[in-house]
Image 1 (cartoon, helix red, strand yellow):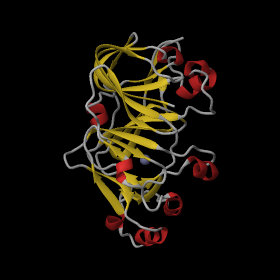
Image 2 (cartoon, rainbow, N blue to C red):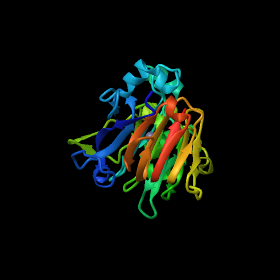
Image 3 (tube, rainbow, N blue to C red):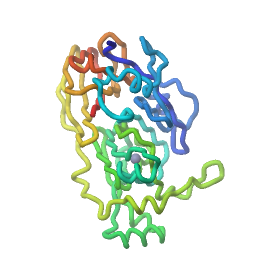
Length: 312
Ligand code: ZN
């Protein structure tokens, strides 16, 4: 069995996207509006494909459906996670995601969306929108219907290297200049609450006020539960940065030779800095890969690099 399968990403172009994914991460993608690189995705909205080897050209969903042994015979009707790099040249809309129960009932059986951000780069004094200031559902409704956005949204200063967990029901927005890697459930369900009255091709993008109000958690949970500063990390170590019932996310720092194992059927891995090798495959900043069940037992890396890995 192959131990690692390198993946070709899918790119999404958006009104808030920029050029960093090409200029900083080296992706060969044209356009000045590249918002997201879906590095590890089996979602029908945009899939990654095997870049080389026995399965070259196969979509990740095909591997999941036809070669479940690669994933340690994990259960489930779909590959559960999605890993993307997001470059926000402008503010994203202010949005919220449903949980599994709401999405399943209202969005054709989709998964809900729990997500975790690791900040790769951001301007000094960058602020993200995380949560809101309404004290009750009534107050939330009136702030939304009266357009009191400045009062409603909670802005939070963030720094490079911080991890932010965004549970379903959390109002959030990534703001201009922030680049991050997101590990999320494999879902593309976003309810847009406010889009700064921007126009795309002369029209405002659709808002989803009723569904947003259905799913927003009121009052918002405290920030201390959601934001974690990155601890100092030793060379050749695995640092867990987020764990919940849907995924575990860790940062791996490789300096020279490093091997470790993961108690998981498969591991998603993305290089966020530097270059090196994973088993016998050359990788560099921006590389995304699936480490299979066979590889996860004894993951071998070399070089000088940092990776974000995740598993269920
Ligand atoms: Zn989101």
